[in-house]
Image (cartoon, rainbow, N blue to C red; front, side, top):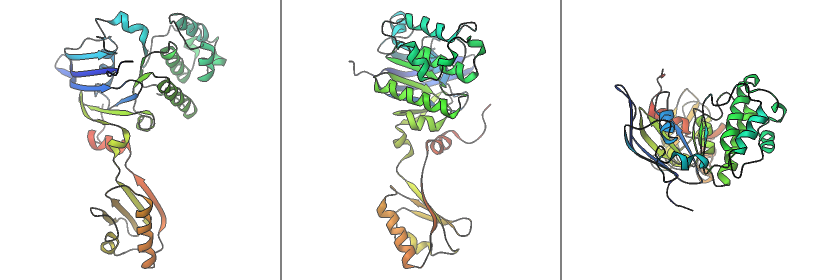
Length: 308
């Protein structure tokens, strides 16, 4: 098996008139891993994916998908790549089971359509036309069609948009199973919990360029917070003396304490906090540990203002 990246993008540029949808974007997705591309609306995520799928041509830059050019080598790539679109692609009058059987017939080693329908909770819809399915059911059928051929690489654009929590978890389980079977998955999502849960690597894109990338753990870091309630006016300087160098403490509002810890929040640190409290007769209530989430990092990098 090749050790080259499943997708490698270098210096990608795509303009629509004077607007640069993608501006000098470079990223790579390793094989048999889940890569999540996240960013605000209009960041260039969908355009980038469509270029990788061969649906759009770049203005400049290089793209290699499974080592091939997605436009010039489209015929060779088509059997190896699964594509889930945000919408469309399924004839509205097609019955669910018949449509998936037809999709399976295009592949040499398809997943059994009946098993896939059952896994995605669509067995009871097998004879229902696509146009009569709910939005969530249509979304799950589009996912089934994208992966039924056991692709080497699957592009999933917003795979859980509009799904209820149960269907979302079923989709997450299927994506994890694809990865375990050796399929490379590239997904775009607005659900940062989804990216943090599923992805081996997260690429944060804004204004058409890559602003940061790494594993969820690398992006969120190891720093944490300890929060608790106690009587107002504690000696924060004395408390900080018991914590690792570089830590900070604040009381806001009165009686609510936040300890910003430089480094991991581990059992030894919690013991230091509770020992200090015990020594000074402080009853720490509702003591809890918090760490930065991917959403925290995302907002720090892309801002908190609304995007149109």
